[in-house]
Length: 356
Image (cartoon, rainbow, N blue to C red; front, top):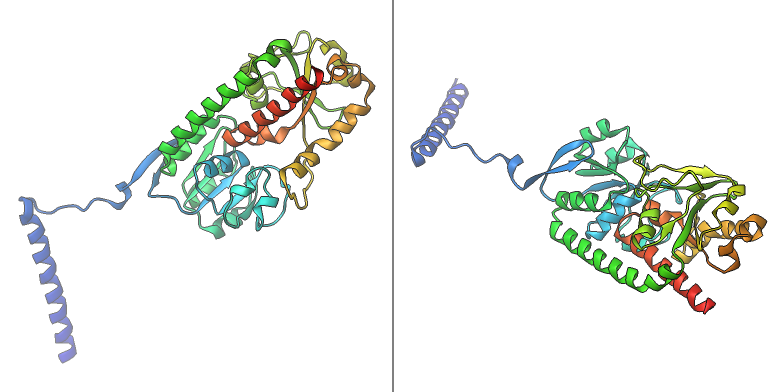
């Protein structure tokens, strides 16, 4: 009986203290109570993306990123993710040595990254284990509904690099840094355009080809393609087969294939830019030069051995250039663009000196 009375007394004491606290709060400003500020509204912002708008609160610390184009943006902003899904799996397993496993970006990764599968086919189980507080991925990701239940998830158009940079900067509270990156990129592009102006004036027509095998040659008549857009912005005139001049087409990422026999019809091109690709595993990349050899050596060999290719004016004058497709298609942001521009400068100006 004494225990029961003690419990009743304790409950009465707690209840009395609660009533006193409520009354005290009410007397502060003449109202019955003061509602505390919801935690949810503290340090929150709404970020627009391809699936609408998503609220991000606080500073994300555990970010999973799907796609090298978005990893590129995070690293530019100085933000380190914990999980990564690459578009092409040059490497399998966790990224325990990113410098040798992630082309062009690995040297900027400061800690081991967990492998969460491929960009468009991520492992839900692997992502769950990481307990992310933000997920970044590409537009059209079929698992968006599932991922959005795990963590706030933002999806982006692959090639809209500046819009994506601003949105991700807002999500990670790096907006000032994003504006600085945009200004620097504009200045750098203006410098390169000026340096290449004489070459463009002397050799304005360029044929841009994406080559996997000589039987698989692709043209991309669309400015959504970063490879084409950069060349046009530098002042080049892209060459297309007769009746297929579609540089202003509204079809997004429109691409069409041509046969090897069509190449002589394009002989008005002063130069040929060949984008090479190789999706096989890298093993240990070692350095960027090794990656470029991995992407280009087979294509260079096929072009050199092909009689039709060698009959073109550009081949005879030594104005055929090779750049990995991965640079402008896989990395359409500032890092890939700057490396692409550097390669253009190096190769185009070198050929000019060689022909002078």
